[in-house]
Length: 484
Image 1 (spheres, helix red, strand yellow):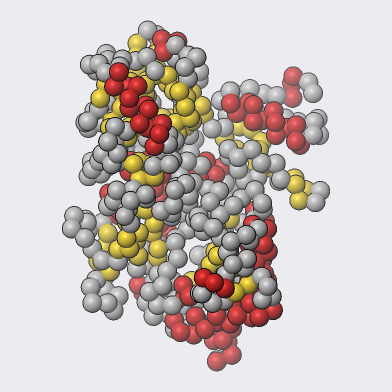
Image 2 (tube, one colour):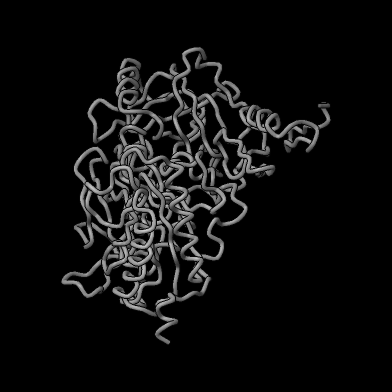
């Protein structure tokens, strides 16, 4: 391969000059040097996966994920775990001046969080002299330290205020002297950045850790939803919501919430749904942030809209594998559901559950009631269980699920719900239920593959929605066709 085959401003490798696998290896190394564009296997931005289907290899142009060492300027203590770090304040040197670069509140485990706190307490000092101002309110609760520790951070880009965004802590760098830390590449506003996404002032205790194992704070969750609001809101707007709240983090007590609580703003609207108390819905990013403020870690929408409350427009098959069921069998089950739906003229879509399985989702016109819709999904599930009893089960009994996949159709009743597309899960890995194209199902993407710290990179590089016609397709349940 000649040197002219590579351009350092816009990275590309001449197709055919080297093997696809070699291209992937070179691209990955160039990404670590902060080059702008490089080919990686479709559809991942950061996963080291190269996938071949038959003779076809799937490629996509994606942006590199930035990595940079920063000086640790101080930290904000966690309010949920005494003696732990909630967020680190970062900086770098430029022309002999120390500049503030933003914060990182994700990526360290509980043990790392406690260790960092202990190390920084030994270096406690007054606020260092900085060459730029911190955003209003961001100094509250900060415990400053001598700028001696260096850490490596992965991040998605820079805001207009020259602060890092979508940041993830990747470890301390004991081999790098703090005074040598400068920017390897000059800050440039990310192409996907719509400007800074400030955390609202009403977000109290932003440093509180919600996912201890992953080190994701309340602020980190708020930034996540601010960044993906355009993706998740269409799946929530105009629908009654059931919520999982974990105010002290997912390792502590969690509970379902369906009605308003004290302190909830009007950004989360109260709506009539035929219940004794009004229920909840939202239609704006402000509503999402209000849920974060309350420690909501899962969002479950109804399968009907407020406009057609008694006639669902979204059906779901939750494929829940029992113990010892291989992932390949779960994928096969999803295709089996899809094929059976296609036989009756229905197009379906698939997403990871964020837990153990997959969800197959069917958008339909809101023409039949809950009981008829549930009966239809029940017939599909029971037919599958009857045809392959060694593989599938359609009953809720735990004893019947071992070694088999439970085809859960019970989520299609009135008031029953499943986690929303792009919602986080209240599970240790901070996973996210993520829509996929059918041809993306593979051994490389498990149910909890996408998480808070990698989903945004995927969305930044997608050329098309994996569910392109989900909101526009018009199809009716076959039982309604027969009735007509």
